Length: 498
Image: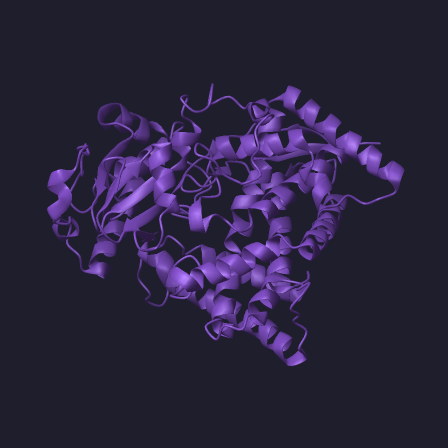
């Protein structure tokens, strides 16, 4: 939910020849960013009286006026080694350094402890920071932007619901049904594109969990509008008719109207319940707070659909990619899942939430996929006051980029970090979703409330895929910027098991 770059440019390929073109577009974007915010580059650098007492001097460079080091950051992202921007500066300046990225003076943290403290800080010290176009699309009431008691209330309600026994049973059976329906249509005489299939399934699962919407015309309408909506998340911050941002805003209005209709029907029919609510909208409707208006609920339902488009489907896709390249891991995963399948069939019981999450090696595969894949490369926070962490001063008004990828691929924390090795997690408890050196779901008060749901969806997909099919994957490569994705959408040739 807090990826620093969600959809900078919707490009299907990346080559050296496109980098200059992309860089030119970025320059235009940043120029418009500053025009729109009416804030000159020099005025964004704070004058801090406490800066003279900093125990550790923050090294680094601010780059060019206005654009800072953004072009270099993006250019590295489009190469086969997107980590090169961070690696070069860590060698020169240390694990915490200063820069100027995406229109703001920025402290970059590749230090696990510093990043953890930033993520766990309260809203009095740091708040989320997003590009102008993204904040326009999310609106003032989005869970991604609100702070304080209202954020804690909504986050807590959603988190509790995703842990409820009723949802666990409903989601498990619902996703299994959707998955098996989709798999039944797969042909053995042409490739299956895993990235497309998982996006289709995950979006339907999430729409059902959030607003109780079943597959049909309304679901398809919502999906089409959603595609138009996310296309503008990182567009130029110009709302004139014909611009991408304007089109995305219009698409969101259409989605909000549909969700509002569903919510008002729930109120009219009085079908919400205080216990065993059927979806997230029910939970928020049952809350007695007058701040949770129908409009606020509708806006947040749409924002919460973003992971269904990106994070969870890519987790499943990358797992297939890594398993295809590691026969030993695939063999052990398949044996574990076949053994569970045989045991449940002997008992005559369907698989439940706890069954899927009890697959220890499967969970290790998912954890290792999250570590290596870095679907969310990091998050940005903005300092509301001067903050000192481990002797480093983060001045008021500056942003902090907590770069997860650097920690996840740091050999000081993970042996042979570029090697897919799910066995490294076998004796570690990852039930909390994060640790000092593993933060794929963020951390602190904004730890993703749907992390268990993400693991469940990936577990169900992997279970049925490896027990029902054999496959041969075509050669494909991972693109890391602006979003993590497969260049060819991960084509595989499947053959059903007897």
